[in-house]
Image 1 (spheres, rainbow, N blue to C red):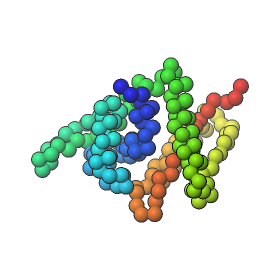
Image 2: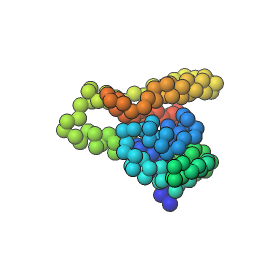
Image 3: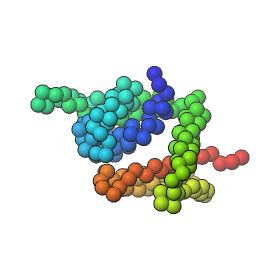
Length: 169
């Protein structure tokens, strides 16, 4: 089996997971309607990879006009099983290397335009209690849900990564 990070950090699969995280359960057809900029066959291939890796589960099946429609959900148990202290360092490294490759490829392009593409780096240290940080994370989650628009003309994907890192000792 492939590394769960290699599976989940694919941009199309991440969008599928994010879409399901908001709606909880959806059919493949509903997912393809939400992520309409990705060809249906490509989306179904990525859904199959997520199903084969147990990251998604089939909640129910229903026959509709001769074909089987499956309702899908995120298998949080499988994700949590792979999110352990033993592999946390490897998970962080894989995540950071995927971001490095993304930036490396972007900056190799002679037509890269950071201003036009709104590329930026930010590091902010926030002084918060655990309760304040929990509230911040809850509000941040709400903000992500609020701005998680469907694809339409004029919209493009914006890859935003936020890392809560340990304090430097």
